[in-house]
Image (tube, rainbow over all chains, first blue to last red):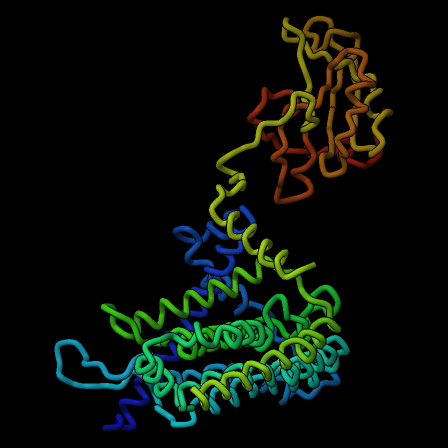
Amino acid sequence: MPDGFIVTAIKSLVLVNLVMLTFAVLTWVERRLIGRFQVRLGPNRVGPIGLLQPIADLGKLLHKESIIPIGGSPFLYLAAPAISLFAALSVFGAIPFGEEATIPFTDYQIYLYIANINVALLLVFALGSFSFYGFLVGGWSSSSKYSLYGSMRAVAQLVSYEVALTMAVIGVVIMAQSISLTGIVQAQDRDGIWYVIPQFVGFVIYLLASTAEVSRIPFDLPEAEGELVAGYHTEYGGMRWAMFQNAEYVSTIAFSALASILFLGGYDGPVLPGPVWMLIKMAFFIFIMIWIRSTLPRVRYDRLMTIGWKVLIPIATLNLIVTAALVVWI
Amino acid sequence: MSAVDQVKGFAVTFRHLFRKPVTQQFPEYKRPVYPRFRGRHRLHRHENGLEKCVGCSLCAAACPADCIRVVAAENDPAAPVSAGERYARIYEINLSRCIYCGYCEIACPFDAITLGHDYELAEMSREAMVYTKEMLLAPSPEPRRTPVAPVDPFDIVGGETDQ
C-alpha cells in the first residue's frame, strides 16, 4: 500500500532535514579527516573535538553581506543556488534506504523510501545533471568572466563525464535487468553477489566519473581556485555561496548512496537493519572521496577532457559490450 | 606516472592517517625558543638596583625602523635612577614598528637593552603596542602593563622631542 500524502510529506521533511544535518556533519568530518591525512588535527576548537564547527560556520555565513552584482541578472543570480540545491536534494526522493519498516511501539508500516519509481535511475541522473543548470545560470548571471569560465567548464565537464557515468551504470542495469533502484538491490540479493565484483571496471569508472559529476578534487575544475578564483560561485557570498556548497555536498551524499545501491547491495546486508547498512556503505564511499581529495592534485583541464573522452568512455563502452555479451550467452 | 604510482600515492596518504598529528596546540603548548631568539626587548638593572641605561640614544640611532624613543634627563645625585650621569626619563619602543633585528642590543654600550624571548605581543590597539620603560624593565615573562603616554604634549610618541 503506498503511503498517503501526509505520510509522504512527513517523510520528505524528515529526510531533507537528515540530509542537511549530514551535510553539516560532513563538512566537519571532511576537514577533520583531511587534517589527519595531512598529519594535522583539523578544526577542534568549537565544541568538543570541534563538533560545533558547522554551527560556527553557519553563524559566520549568516552575518555576511548579500551582494547582487551590477550588470548581472538579479533574478537568475538569486535563483541559481536554489536550483542547484533543489536538484541535489530531490535526488533523495528516489533513493531507497530500505523497503518496509514498522514504526516502533505501533504496528504502522511505512516504506523507507519516498517514491519507488520504476525508472528511478533515469530520474536520479536527470536530477543530478539538473543541478548543473544552477552552476551555469549562477556563473552566467554574475557578469564576471571567472564565473562564466567556471560554469562553461562545469557544463563541459558534465557533458564529458555523464556519458561515461551512464555507460558504467548501464552495465549494472543489464546485470540486474531492472532500472528501478529497489529492483537493482533485489537483483543483487537474487544473484547472491554484490555487483562491485562482476562490474569492477564499471565501479572504478563510476567512482571517477561521479567524482567529476560532483566536481570534487581531482576534478574540481569548475571552481579551480588557482586559476578561476572560485569558478561559478566567485561572485557569491554568505548563505548563497553556502547553498552552492550545500548542493555540492548533498550531491556527494546522493552519489555515495547511489554507488552503495548499484555496486554494494544497497540496504541489503546481514544482521543489521537495512538503513544502517545503507549508511555504512555511504560512509565508506564518502571516505573514499575524501581520501581521493587528500591524495590527488587537481588535473589539468585538457587532461580532464582526455581522461573523460579517450580513457573512460572507451573503457566504459568495452565494459558495456562485454557485460551484454556475457549476460546474453551465459 | 604509471597507474602503480597512483596507487602508491593512496597508500602513502592512508599510512599518514594513522600517524600522530604534528600540530602544536599553541595557547596550551608554547613552543620553546632557541637561546638566541630575538623577541620583545628588555631593559636591565645593575645588581644594586640602578638602571643600566644612561639615556645615550645610541639604540635609537641604530634602529633601522626608528621605533625607539629615548629622552634623557640628569640624574639627581641624591637619588640616582641610573649608574651614569644621566638616565632615560622616557624610554619607549613601538613594537608595532620594531623588526626585531637586534641592532639596539649591539649598539648599547652598557648592555642595558637585550632582546628577550617573549613573542606573544598581540594587542587590541596600536597605542598598546608602545611599550614604556616600566614595561620593558619588568621581569619577564609577565610584562606588567602601565598606561602609555601621560597627557604631556612632549611625551606623545612621534611628536617633537623636548631636547
